[in-house]
Image (cartoon, rainbow, N blue to C red; front, side, top):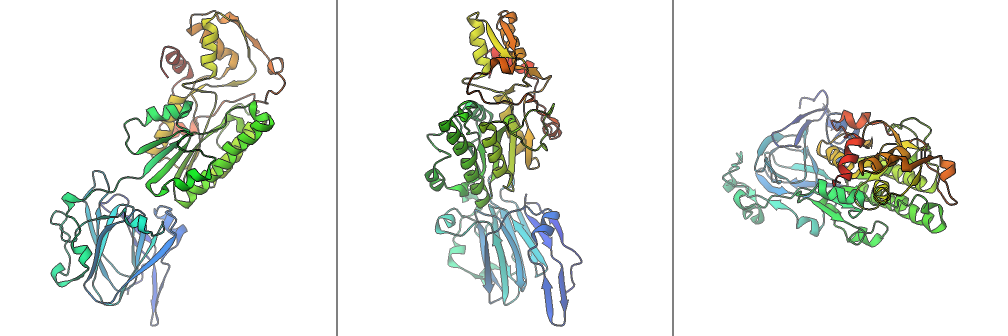
Amino acid sequence: MEPARQLTARTTPIPGLMLFELPVHGDNRGWFKENWHRSKMLDVGLPDFQPVQNNISFNAARGTTRGIHAEPWDKFISLASGRIFGAWVDLREGPAFGTLFCAELTAKDAIYVPRGVGNAFQTLKDDTAYTYLVNDHWSAQAQAEYTFLNLADEDVAVPWPIPLDRATVSPQDRTHPRLADVRPMERRRTLVLGADGQLGTALRRAFDGDPTVDFAGRAQFDVTSEKAYRATDWRKYGTIINAAAFTGVDAAETADGRTAAWSINAAAVTRLARTAVEHSLTLVHVSSDYVFDGTADAHTEEEIPGPLGVYGQSKAAGDAAVAAVPKHYIVRTSWVVGEGKNFVRTMAGLAARGASVSVVDDQWGRVSFATDISAGIRHLLHHEAPYGIYNISSSGERQSWAQVARDVYRLCGADPGQVTPVSTEEYAKPGTAPRPRSSVLDLSKIRATGFDPPAAAQRLAEYLDGGS
């Protein structure tokens, strides 16, 4: 056997199906190879699919033929001995459904098979050992989710080297359906938690019409309840978007509020992070400018958190847990405006009554409209942006709360002069939580992905004109 000089990978006509050539070192005693080397394989493009089970299929005779089985997990396949003719058919929903790829594999070859791609092989030598790593544990429940295709399907027309009438095939594999009768394997779904809040409502609109997205408010999934996690079939999901949070900044400074903030923003998020790791899920988590102390003029994604109050501390703890998930997006935002109670609605109500109001003028930031935050989240997922932390707020010049209030009054046809600017110290009451002076978020990183948040002034006018 000629040794492969280095690990190489190439793509195939089936999206996500990758063929590898493994370095094999041989002499008169036999050979040695690194069959699985996570770091090297990631470097050549293999997804970090986190295998949890190793299986071996030993085939005593040439002509043994197995498949075509599409399983609800990803597989990394290689040979310990012998030679096979492999056939892979895309049985997932989408335009590639029915696409065929074939290749012969020996001990120097391996192939990564994504979830939903049908896998089959025919042994070309006696004593062939076919090995595969999978990233979920086999169970009877999981097997019920398999999708099968008949080995002799005329539309796909696999060119078997040994005709099937002379091959060893199980009775079950001979009775699988033809392509026209195959129900494609559904794509993994997305679960949105906290779907009844300001951001959750905007996420419902952002993903409206997408049948693969499920929405759960607290009544459907309480993030603090262990029962909710155990009752969920995580195998059908690929992504969690966590919009659930305790947002009572001042209430978090009380005894009961402190416990609630840590329960929802930290402990529950840690449980979500563990779930994401266990099931190889992408976790999208919405964070806050309150994780910072506000001393920087504009906060970048690389800034180390330094929260001032309990709310910010609980959010920073949740962020730390999510950062340990291999596939994660932490979306930091500020001054959120959407449906429901928020600063802009409060000011609009006061303006409508012609009321005078005192508003803090020495805390700066940008309002962030829930519509744009949800659009940014969808953009990150749709474009498969690199995992990590992203700031998303509306764009434009920074403003103080008092300046935002004056804009609201003006747009509502009221006198902006009825808004009196005051300092944080003048406004503060007993029990008021400390707040960052600057909540301005640097938007360079999200813009580099191709998403440019609209200007806050434009969104504010649209919002007050009846938009959301």
